[in-house]
Image (tube, rainbow, N blue to C red; front, top):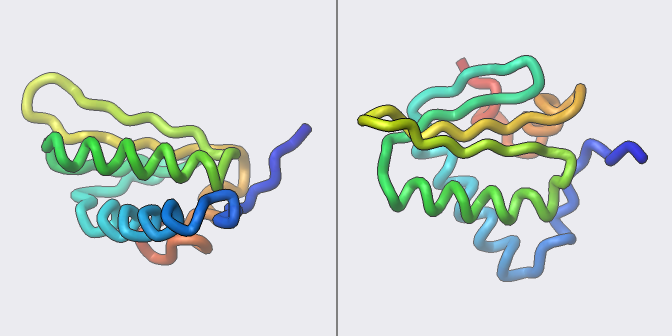
Length: 107
């Protein structure tokens, strides 16, 4: 079965939707850099425990409403950034841009 390429925010409770909205604003505002991948994007963030926890919380909620997405959250040794990868099947980048606007796919 092929999963639809669409986000279903109704899969989240009202409280979850509110928190998801707060977190996506945070994610997009805290992004240091954005790299386009073949099947998605990779975001970089400053290495900070609070940032990592908020990213992880957002990923958990995002998986509920967008089950077609795959996520990777990486902390490299040393002072490197936190990296968040978001990928999916063909069309994923278009869905992300439609859902979140210019935060995805910006230069």
